[in-house]
Length: 588
Image (cartoon, rainbow, N blue to C red):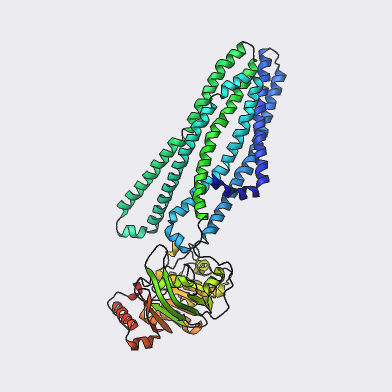
């Protein structure tokens, strides 16, 4: 229940709107409570033969008028309370999404994407229900229940005591059921998260499923997960579904007692027939609060379980964050200095990088190559502080990157990741993602530098062509060039490209390199690649092996020395000649 503290700021922000809505709800209840009094008067007049057509017409008219007022007030409280619950849901989702954007990349490696989606959808719905209809049912149940009991006491205290006698037992049963509901709902949400992640993976890998003719096993696996989700839901329904039958049983038990004892009181003239009818009406009104009690507890338990899952995200602290005192990144040429760098991933005992020393000179292209798993992508991630880097090991223009404001540091870096991720949007939006205010001329210039200008002419709507999910409607080379254009357009002084030319043909590769070497010599470029043709055009090359730099220098010098670089280039050239192009090698 402590998790509901998360909602206090959002509720206080809208306290007056919610208060007006709850006031309208209470006025509806007052109108409902007044109707049995009118019915009592009419029944007593009929019993005593005092009723007239005019008096009955007046009482019926008042009931109709009260019904109209209740309908209007219901519109008010639904809009005020339930509408504000939607606003709270929106704000809470924004807070969670905002916090997620600050978390380190390691969090997303550990947390399944399907689980995150479940928390941001299914759990948010549960929170909204507990805040919206849960609040309504709670206030309505408490006020209407206490007021109904008050009117019943006014009619006959003894009969009221008989009517509410089962309630203590009801409270005990409800408490036990609420605990069981909470546990089972938490299990259901976990099962839903797993099912969502499974569907996401199967959808993303549908081409692979079809290629391997694995539809049968995949469908069977998904079916079993779905059955498990249904089984857990049925267990939840068995627990939460007991609330209403239990409430109805005790309501009918009270009704039977009122019929027996209240009927005798009426026969003995202790109460009038009108009082007996009104008492029955108030007891019927009391049945809703009794049922609402179970519903509210169920909603609150579900909301608490979901809030706990959301709070788990909000309580996660980023591994990489600004120091107490930071400074903006310097407006230098973009020199990167790496000094005796060691790095081990959290939870691992194997060093990924050991004693790495490298100077990435401004205005130069530095190539980074080496076998799979040698730490190349990790090194690029450390420069951008995607992972926490040891103090004093990496600097930008002479300043330790740990002393720089994260946003300022990353604004100096243009990144082309190994997986050229594109949004399901237009080519224009994808290129201008890092610089949304860029005009058409700047976007086209970046596309030209990335060798994408000819492709744009073949696209049905040019820059406004919408690419598919993750850009899969484009070829691998086209996706890489869009990603390169996106990086160029930012104007950042440092370009970090992780195997960014692996899917482009030789002619396009040379056009892009010409752009880097001749048209855009102002940038510092660190380029991970396995292509000998690309390495040959770099100003400086470093070879990584088992987390260490084993060779570095200019390509001609390294070839002449006959060291690890020369051996690697010879092997890559041999692979290309044998039809196993080096551009397919994993750059991690």
